[in-house]
Length: 96
Image (tube, rainbow, N blue to C red; front, top):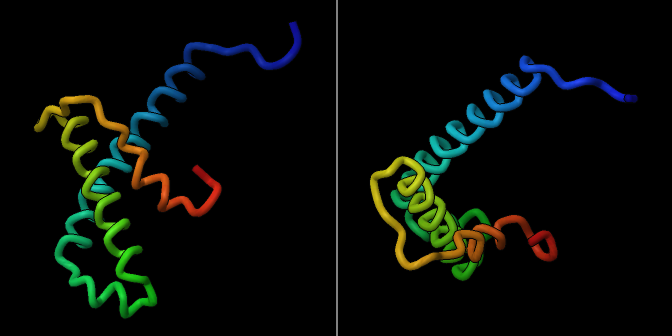
């Protein structure tokens, strides 16, 4: 067999790394969504964003925060919902 051989340590390290990243992302979502919610639209349009962009951004992170709440078990999501709808737009045209 060629190539590196996986070990228990490799599996454990990968699992821990992904888990740390997921927890960090969820925390960042909560903080950024709280900041967006507290920030007047006029402040964001003052940065050069259109009103439509501001609405899309706030909607995207409201969705992301709902996903965080589902992740934490503090809320349920029914019916099924595609959380990528508005968040995908934050990636830019053609990237989602």
